[in-house]
Length: 204
Image (cartoon, rainbow, N blue to C red; front, side, top):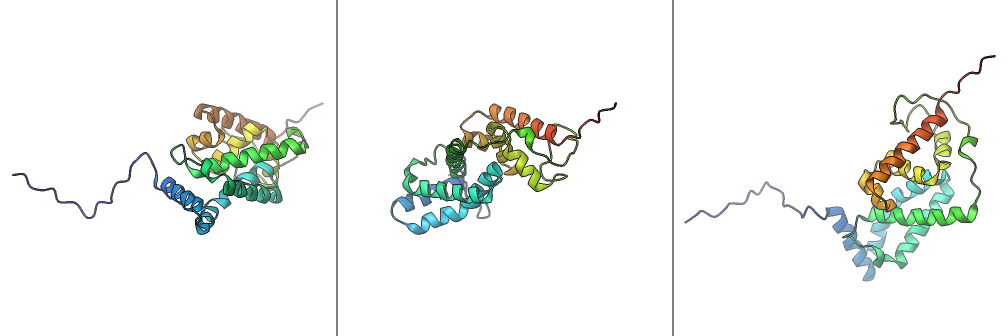
């Protein structure tokens, strides 16, 4: 008769690989909020509002607008909590998608964008296609430059370079393919590098 297998008490339990723990937690909080648990919504807000604010701030370079967009995202979530499906992706990507749509709506109403080349800033020479976005550039000039990128490149730069999201998470937030994210990120970095490259001296 075979011996029964003795469990290793030092071995942690295995969760299903298809659904990460944080997705289960967010999904559980959403269900609790829908059932009337206000503390669950507070927990969701505390967990995710900072990331949404950062995304909105990098997209607009305006802390007031970023705070308003962040508030609008969570007000929207109060009324549309059922729209989140944890089987389709993580809540951070879902909320980023909501913030993106609210930003687009706001931008359509404002229609006051300057051309990308209108922004002055310090110059540096990009050594390769991967632009370091955190050193050698004045932060304010960088924010202004990013805010004036065409939106499709701005979104990729903000999510991948500033928020350090994976290509997969960024693609989920923007509703596009991973290859599209890579292409937009490459083009956005090129535009930033071109903006901050030293101007060539014109000799008489």
